[in-house]
Amino acid sequence: MKWSFKVGEIFGISIRVHAIFLLLLLIIGLSEASTSGVRAGLISMLFVASVFVCVLLHELGHSVQAKRYGIKVEDITLLPIGGVAHMHEIPENPRKEIRITLAGLVVSFAIAGVIFLILLGAGRISELRSPTLSGIHFLANLFWANVILGFFNVIPAFPMDGGRVFRALLAQRLDYVRATHIAAMIGQGLAMLFALVGIFFGNWLLIVVALFIFMGAGSEEHMVQMRSFLREVPARTIMATDLYPLSPGDPLSKAIECVYRGCYSDFPVADNGRLMGILTKTRLITALHERGLEAKVSDVMDTDLKPVRPDEPLAEVHQKMVESGVTAMPVVDEGHIVGMISLENIGRFFMVSSALKKGAA
View 1: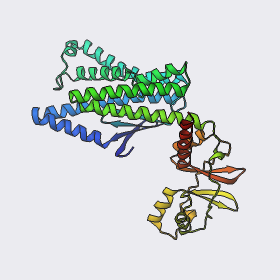
View 2: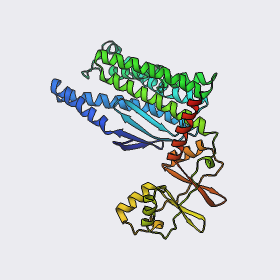
View 3: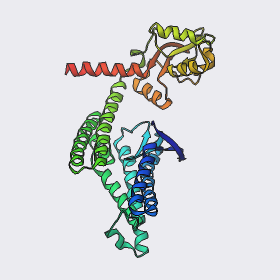
View 4: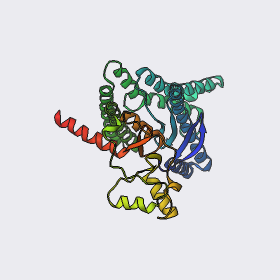
């Protein structure tokens, strides 16, 4: 995610913090310090940081459970409105999705339970009745923060935790795509309600959360529809066969000539028909900047190849691209390159097919 940076790694999962979160932390600290003193400002910053540590633990709950099912978790990013765990896929098995979702909620309520026991043991349980942002009742505030985090996520506003559980329950009786559509509509409806409440009460944070829910629901519904549709289509259906292969010894200027003529900007690199590598648009642009037009293709091509079979479903091809972070892959049959397929190809095919399907309906 742009404007975020890595701060550590837990269980093989990168932990990232968005720059705006740090800016928010500073603003809160300065605002509190200007009215109640430097000490109060520091305590308020510590409290906000502690809340986000709890958010991180909540997301780790999801992530660790997902890893148990073999799902790759790229990273967890802390944003001003919460945390996001980037998983390469969401299981379509309803029971697995429910368990992954509930793991985060269990963590939040478990943290609240531990804090409750600490306050009870210290004879300070009365602090829970009068939470204050002044920092006097730090643990009591943290207790309520986790309770609110837990109950807020229970709201069936897809793609929040409650919405995911709702979708999984629907998917036990309905088609997965249909279940996602219903959950997304309800999530977007609740998002609009949150936005209206936020506007009425002047709560900008609720408006931002509403926008996040609305966009997230629409995005995930689109991804589920695309994955379901592409599962039935083999790679050969949309692969580009008008190839412009480069040789390892060619200069980058030859690739640029092809680009000027309107060719694809991702090139297979072959030697006597045998695939040797691939020169992607990103690598080409970077190499031009760093090495110039006369640099050899063999010096900059990507040799870490993950070729695609002609009969491989587009859903699996798309998943490979997402996991590998590449925009194009060669299609290989018995060691010989027969085509190229890109995220752009897949996106255009899905867009046209969806339009035709809607027109027929």
